Every structure is written in structure tokens, then in C-alpha cells.
Image (tube, rainbow, N blue to C red; front, side, top):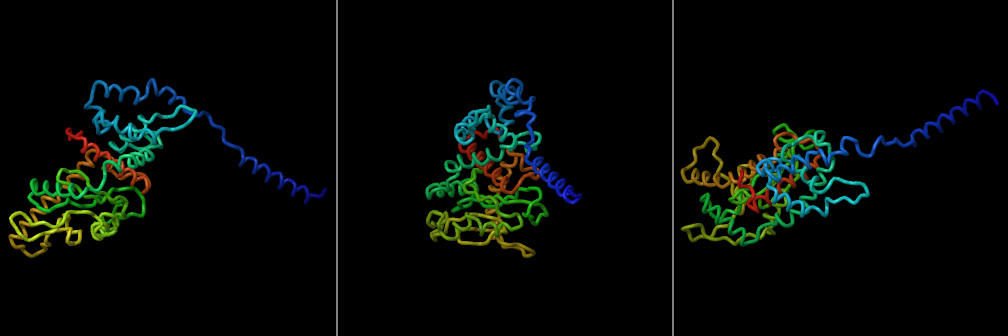
Length: 334
């Protein structure tokens, strides 16, 4: 056997050893870290949270942004999708929901929470709550909303206020005019700060008007598939006028979408000033609704460190929870 054969044999042997090393699986040091094994006896959920539930309802509300009755209702609605089938003990559904609510309420980092199922829980909340609590209003419900806007804010034939909120995220392709990365929650609300329609996930680089045109809300309003009441006269008038939504200057003027008169450097006539004032009173409902959402779910106060798909889930979860709280009148503390 000459030196060439020996060299070839050594190369083959080295290749086989490398392949064997790559196939060798890394041995687990443990299935569950020992420090987590005692969480049932010493953990946050099984001690502090249960103590708040039994003896300090105010602290429980601050911890989860809801009272215990609503928390139990959410557990019931999401239990089927959050339950894990495993021969090993898994984190129970109520604890998964509690951790997710805490994340949304504070914006704590994933590292500090040490769990990776938060986005799954957000999607489950949207899946189970949206069909029940976020239905598009019927014609009779639109009429009730219009009566409330006229009674409370002196703006007749108003179906709601519309606007978009930029949710800031870190490092993505959604770069907006404010020099930050964001996706947009486009929404309408009634006269009592309750969302009536939402559209989530548009790119932050677009204007509110562009987002509206591409959104399901805008398309349904423009193509007539949104079932709204027939035109009726304004108070004290005979001529019929269409029902409409109200938005700011970024939105286009349409038969069912009103915006303020542009002022610029020109002095507006008194009648147009009064119109803009009335429209502003009605339109601020959506700004206040967004403000309540951010005050309750403080994850929106800082840029969210996650992917755009996960941000959509976070927005969906907070919106549905906000709606269910207001529907059940569990938000009196705010």
C-alpha cells in the first residue's frame, strides 16, 4: 500500500467521523429545569395570583386589566384550544391565559416571562371571541349608534368615528412617515368608546387615507356591502341626508364619510367653523377609544419586539378583550 492509498483512507475515515458527529444528538440535561419543578408550591401563579383573587380584587384587576369573573369567562371560552394533550404535565390553560394577559398589560419581555406560548394564546383569544363580540352592527344597531352621537355630541346621522393607530414594532419593512416601524389598526367606534369594526395589519408607511381605501372597512363602505340605514332628514330639516362616518383630514370626502373643511391660511366662514367643531367633537371618540386601549394594555407604550405576524395577534387579542370588557360593563375602574 503506497502513501497515496494511505492518504485516501485517512480522508475517508475523517469524513465518516465528521458525519457521525453531526448525526449524534445532543443529550438533554433535563426535560424541565429543576427550578421550575417547584412552581406549583412556590410559583407566582399558584401563590400571589390566587391570593389576589381571594382577598384583593383591586390588585387582581391591576395585574390582569380585568376582574376575576371576566377572567373565568375567558378561560371557559379558550379552554378547548389552549389545552395541551401530553403525557407530561403541561402548563394549565388558566395559567397560559394569565401570563398572556400580564404580557399585554405591561409589555414585559419574553425573557422575563420565560414562556413562548404567548402568541398562540393571543390567536386563540381572537379565534374564540371575535365571532361573538365583534360582529358588524345591524341596520337597527347603526341607527342606535347614530341616535347616541346626536344626543351626546350634537352630530346627527353619524355611524361612528374612524381613524388609524400606528403600533410601533422593531426592525421591519413597515416604515412610516414618523420614522418608526409600525403596522396599523384601522377602526371605527360608537359614541361610548366601543370598537364596532377593525382592520389590522396594514403597512405603517401608508397614509390613513390609503390604508382606509385598501381596508375591508373602506371597501365595504365604498361598494355598498356595509348594510347601513337609508338616508333621513337632519333634525329640523326636510331634505334627506345620508348616514356617514367622521374622520380627519387624511380621509377622503365620500357620501358616507365626512371630513372637516380645510382651513389653511384662509379664514373659514362661521358656518364651516361650527361644522368643523361639531365634527371634531364626534371624531374625538375614536382618539379616546385608542387612548383607553393603550392605557389598559401598556404593551403599546414601547416598540414591540416581535414579528409583524405576532404583532397582528397582539392587536387582535387586546381589541377583543377591550370589547368584551365594555360589553359586560367590567371597565368601571377606568
